[in-house]
Length: 83
Image (cartoon, rainbow, N blue to C red):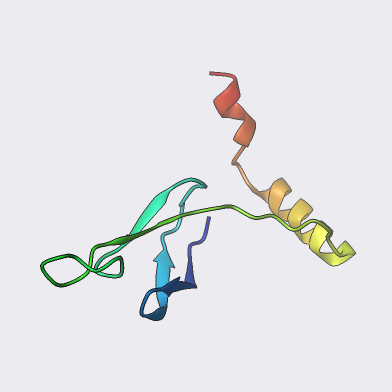
C-alpha cells in the first residue's frame, strides 16, 4: 500500500527497484536494460513479478497494530466479491 524500495538481483549485480504505492500482487515491473544481452549489443529488459508475502506468525504488538490499522481503515477487500 505504501510502496517500497527493494534490492533485486540482475545479471550485473543487485539494483534498487522502486515499488510504487498501491502495487498489487502479480503486477509486472520493468527494469529497462537489465535483462539478457541483445544480439546487436546492449541488453533487453528484465521484468519482476510482485509477490505479496505476509508474516506467518505475529507478536502480540504486531497483532494489536494490525487490528488498529484495520479499524482505522475504510478499505474493505471483500467489496470486490459482492459486485
